[in-house]
Image 1 (cartoon, rainbow, N blue to C red):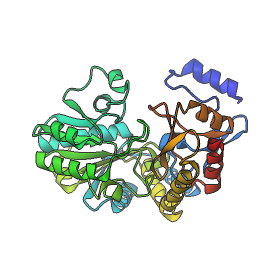
Image 2: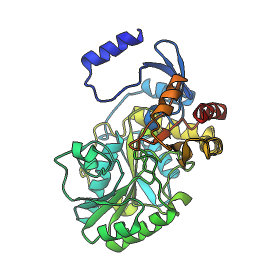
Image 3: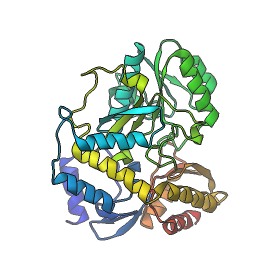
Length: 387
């Protein structure tokens, strides 16, 4: 089917929710996607940070095909070998304090359950989140999102959500108190324009939460699963070694198969009783096969090591380039800050068949490529940007 037919069908029958690129993706391989018109595009956006292991990785294809021939799905009312193996594998690459996994379907669902667990563990209601943070579009998650218009779109908001200034420990100190159940934050604020905080901010935040008896939650929907050159931001040098009480995951966790998760400490999991949490499709067999295969592909192909090389190449090629203020972020979660709006650069790249992303900061272009992306292709994109 030609692009105009595809566009007409979507426009006729689908609710319009996104401003879309003028292409229809038909298939992908590695860091490349092909359109309905047979054109080949370099994908440095990864379907919004989802395709970390690359498009149609053969290990994932084999794992999903093998599972599909057994059983697509059965709920958590039965035990499942592959669900157990997925939980074990995910916990094995996490900081040692995070000992249990809860599976769901998306990032916003993971964040909803994380905040619920914090309230259950403390018996409190207040949740502190940060300016510029985005946590999803469902009720509790969008109420915790203090980014642009998103919180307003969620009105009427869930009560007991309070805002602090990201990276400002004095603001956090004033906001977190004995009434606070949990503190949730993106360790690198992707949609806000790849905004970072000093490692000491996380160290002090951990101390403040401990003093107040509040649960600390890292929303690693975008930073997790190797994208920042570590399996998780939690516990890494980027966080000053800090490990939160809960880490939430989604996006690249299943390489495109919908799956989310919360990783929690024993102190949290020990307080959860039967029927306190649930998710019909959470932990489904196809999703679990995708989780295991994604983690194995990242390990076997040394993708985190490649992400370090990607970051180094982008910084080397673009730092100090005319019109570019600097490069933010880590690994394959990068923001390129321009002196003015980044839209002309975005359009120029798309015209050269290179897909990137914008952000809520009009001056920041985002790169969220597969962690398997070839350095030659990164160099080529930087060459176009340098122009």
